Image 1 (cartoon, rainbow, N blue to C red):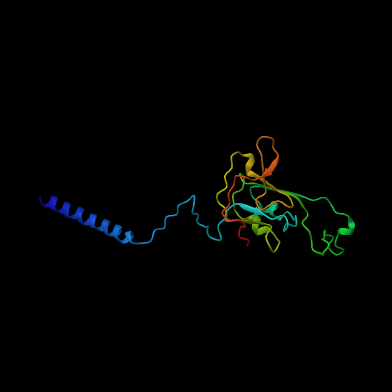
Image 2 (image 1 turned 45 degrees about the vertical axis):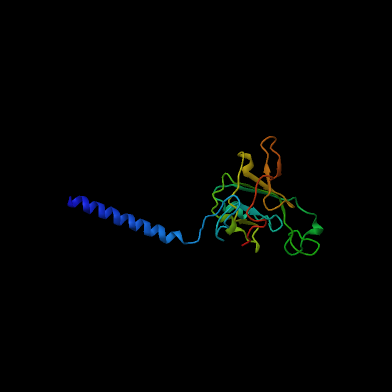
Length: 184
């Protein structure tokens, strides 16, 4: 009988402890996010989808060499006529005297990317041409859509390969967290 009373009193005490935790949490503000309509913005050091800016790229190829999974490829633009080259460096320049991007196309295969950030660290430009955005909701229907390509004039998210004919077209179904990703 004594063991039974000890068991019941211990169970009653444990129930009160659990109810005390529930009572403490009951009056705290709710932290639930209604996901499809509300979205949390990740921390600034979050490594989301890679974004690329063809205007800032100088086609040095450092990101390609730094990538351990070999998911980045680029093609330099064709050489420009001699009168459009800077006399001191031999680099193409714009009419204002600024260096112009020399990239023809740039591709990233998100299916092979491990989001390590080495490509971003290797970029020598002051405003990074390649950086991790805060976007984490990329959805791909096929394996071909995981390959993104950028050319000069494309938006920050590039074009995706269509599975039907293999041609690249604008990304239509993807919704991004931000219009312009955070630049580092």
